[in-house]
Length: 453
Image 1 (tube, rainbow, N blue to C red):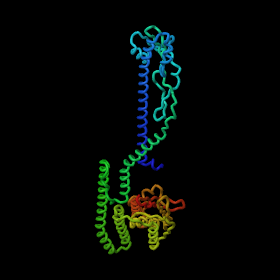
Image 2 (cartoon, rainbow, N blue to C red):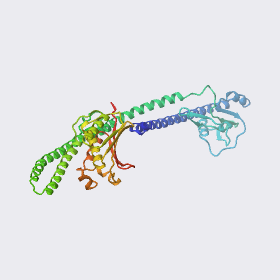
Image 3 (cartoon, helix red, strand yellow):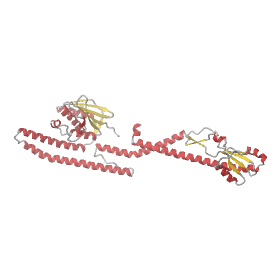
Image 4 (cartoon, rainbow, N blue to C red):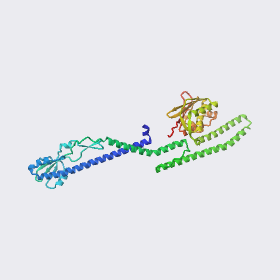
């Protein structure tokens, strides 16, 4: 769940869900409040018409019978009584002005300072599926009414009665279906939005492992097609740059091999034996650097196909070859996982790491294990280790920590660079650390292959 909400799909889903919920809630609340306002306005207009009719009808009734008539004519929401006038309020209300305008001249309508007791009682209405309650805001007051014959009446405008008509509506099912439909819609939109991004991200990841991967298909929205076309163009340019560099290094290597061979033959004729050995040693180092440079270039642009590999078998074969070559190599553990990779490149990667351990640390103790869906290969030597400040720089091409370490062993400073390039092309990584018990420990991590992932 945490991984989902941390992903792009989860974030878009939450953003859409919250946006739709907030928008729908505000829209529903505004609609409910407007409906309540219209109901209050219509009720006030209805009470105004009834008040006009009641006052005019009361005036027709004889004075002695008006109290009896009003006891029968009064209805809920409006009560007209014969009585003394109430103290006047400051100014007239909207209801008093409207009633006076309807009755015309001869009638005197004024707002009283007092209000019916029922006006102070709670008269709440529910909005937003019963989640919010609001107070009734319609007309509720007492008016003094003087008829044309001079008799004083008291008109009370009352709020609606709270009548219990049955069980309250249960909106839980409605709200549940509403939230479920919005969540489904937000999830579908989030998936549709982030699917092209996932394709591009996957293509970028595969590009680091295989520069010759097939180009992306140009489909979907115009923006996605444009991004895919730009990605394909970038891949083509990178592939062309790597190819040109490989061809250039191959040409340099080929052109240098002939003069270097001639120089070696001519050095055989040097009479001074000590000078001859030094010159031949330097020439051999030059030839090795040329060969390793070509290997480095090819490690960035390989045409070998990816295939299923058994890491344990591959590692056993590499260690066995090292032992046959007279190197002190010990292998322990098993990973028990399958890898998708290039056999020759992985052999070169493991071989370079083991060779470095033997050259600079006299031995290589290899330990392999499976952790969190990946294989971890640890190669430890018995050498002096590498200073912490130099551990990142040893991956740079042709970098040497000290002259004696590289010259005496015949190294060119490219072994770790080539190994790291191969590991990264397979989605893995290489890390260096000085072991607490002495020696340098190189950790190679390679991910397990999961079909259809």
